[in-house]
Amino acid sequence: MKKVVLREDEMPTSWYNVAPDIPGGLQPPLDPETKEPIAPEKLAAVFPMGLLEQEMSQERFIKIPDEVMEVYKIWRPSPLVRAYKLEEALGTKAKIFFKNESVSPVGSHKPNSAVAQAYYNKREGVKRLTTETGAGQWGSALALATSKFGMECKVFMVRCSYDQKPYRKSLMHTFGADIVASPSPDTATGRAILEKDPNTPGSLGIAISEALEDAASHEGTNYALGSVLNHVIIHQSILGLEAKKQMEIAGAYPDVVVGCCGGGSNFAGLMAPYVPDYLEGKKIKFVGYEPASCPSMTAGKLAYDSGDVVGMTPLLYMHTLGHNFMPPGIHAGGLRYHGMAPIISALIRDDIIEPKSVHQLECFEAGVLFARTEGIIPAPETTHAIRGAIIEAMKDPNDPKTILFNFSGHGLIDMAAYDAYFNGELHDYSYPKDEIAASLADLPKIG
Image (cartoon, rainbow, N blue to C red; front, side, top):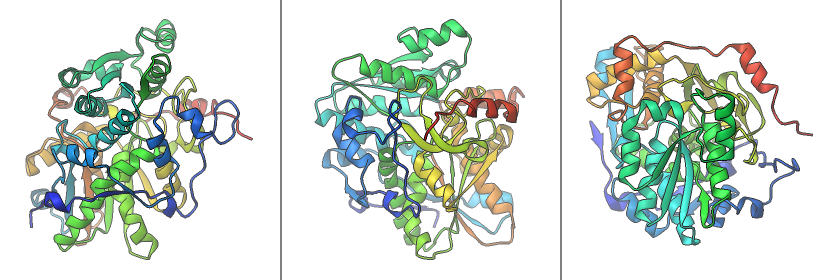
């Protein structure tokens, strides 16, 4: 069976929340001023209560609103595909399946949460949303979602991606969003950073600070985040819930679940619905692959840290490289974040997720192989998952294991990255340990 496509009426009608099933639990987010657990009322300045309830929820299943389901049906359910040609090219007996999230209107998994976030904000009377975006996939998704619910949208796009990916800007403009390069002259945060370093490539931490500042200073405006937070991972669980049904139809069950990791949403969305099976004794391995140039899981520290540069966000207990960490301008812009989702971090702590890092060139090589065998050009972020799946398959080519990975997005608006790869302009980069140590020295002092 090459492809498994669910009927519309077979879509999951509830999201799954893995938080209650994490053995060691989650540490609460802290108020950056008092260092005590933050009150939901304080977060209500930039988030609607509907999302805050999900963020703190201990319910395993949360009903998907009908209004969200209607928008989801534009592209959901997404197909599950067996990568026969890739298997053949590798010469492996492993069965490799991928959940194809590139079929969404913006070409990635991001609308799964963007549509939900726009809906809950609209329901509570919010008229405008601000956000950050790295590669542009989240910004595109939120632009689509706000257009569906008649809202305004402003996107702070990390400078290096703003320059590298002009057509992401075009996509966001088409859906009616306002986009600026971050750091920008539009906020006090951006102006201060530009004064210090006019040529900075920017970072997601800076862009988050700018988006939060903008939201706090405009009436009727809230902030939306595309990864890291619990409610985002809850929304992304729809793709994992679909994948479980589809794998059953295919008569298969994964031995290994693989995903690329930046903030953690796409990998968590795929693997979280399998966590109850693991806890019940099912033999299944979860492996998250991140860039060696931004190794929050493999070289960072599990500690409380701010999600942004200025310190406006709650302090999250997560694997972090330090909120002042400035990653190099790699083409996988969506993976250039200093912290990892608290849910992913907790699952690493509990030895349920195994973190790995890979280099840029081996990922692009894997992406080109996938394009030439399976016919879909992956986004630079997604090549990390493909490389991970190949690594898992080739540990023992004669092992008939079953591998499932998330094809989180296509690369049709990222062809400049492929040009750079083919022209020999890309290089591998391992972040110096002393610079990571210096960044970690600035972690907030707790207790």
